[in-house]
Amino acid sequence: MAGLSPSQSFGSSTGLQSDSTAPPPDAQAPAEQPKYFFREKYAKLGVKGNFMPLAAQPINIGLADWLAHQTVENYRLVSSIVACIQETDQGTGKPICNPESCPKMTAGSYIWLDNNRRPVAVSASQYISLVQRWLNAKVHDPKAFPTDAPGTTSTTYASGSVTTPASETPIAAGPTNLNAPLSQLAGKDWIGRDAGFPESFYNDCRTCFRQMFRIYAHIYHSHWIDPFWNLSSSSTSQGWTDLNSCFVHFCTVAKLYGLLTEKDVEPMQPLIDLWIANGSIPPAAANEESKIKPPQ
Image 1 (cartoon, helix red, strand yellow):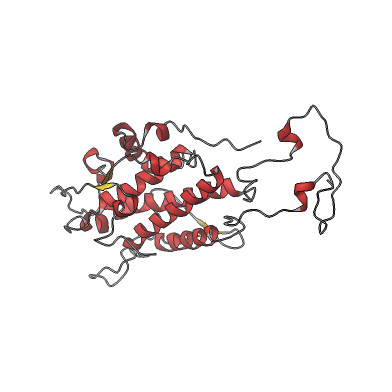
Image 2: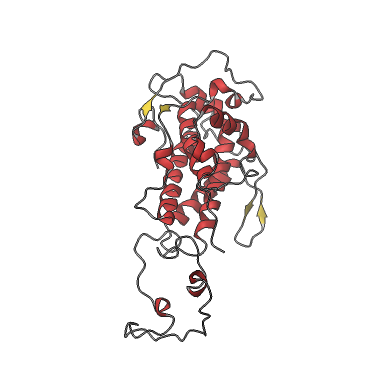
């Protein structure tokens, strides 16, 4: 997927208006980078507008379909951000994020499990590439993220109704209690069941968001200055404000639907708190008004 080029900003794909900001003069890259991004003056966004319409579930779209859309869209955005740190540094001839510059993920101790579920030590660039590969496979897996309407199956006719298609064998259902709630009579429920999504769908979405958050956290803690601050010197690129715009949208969606826990977001909590205080993260999202409670 393409990275954020000087002519391609977050605002161009959302309809929100661009708000360019001039870089302040005090951001020279020291040996150990101060956390400039936790300061209010650097919490600005590259676009103006209310992010809630981009996050709120439309009335004519089911919750599972909307969560799937948001997962795919945020994966697209984080991929465009990652492309910036995968660009070749002209001074070193290596990607900006490489095993030497980033021997491990920052903003948290993250490990990768191999196919045998054994922990493997990997560099930040390797971890991010593995996450991207996993995310790409997940969102393109029709079993995990179905794109077709669910077909009629024998489970729809568990009682052996006479309307069962002739090609299916009726399945005799056990005795029912007429006093039981309809949800119990219908069998186990989960988010997206009626739309053909698997039982694991909601947890898959949460895992996707957790992994995307880790990428954002590493980028802020290790690459805010290089390349994103340096991109701000271009008259046609907003660099760190574009990064902020993508991340504030991500946080708005994650908080609105409760896709990340307080522990998950600890590495970036000061910036999130700034955005909640200044309204960049809308109150409805800050208060988790649409937080999902999976069916029991």
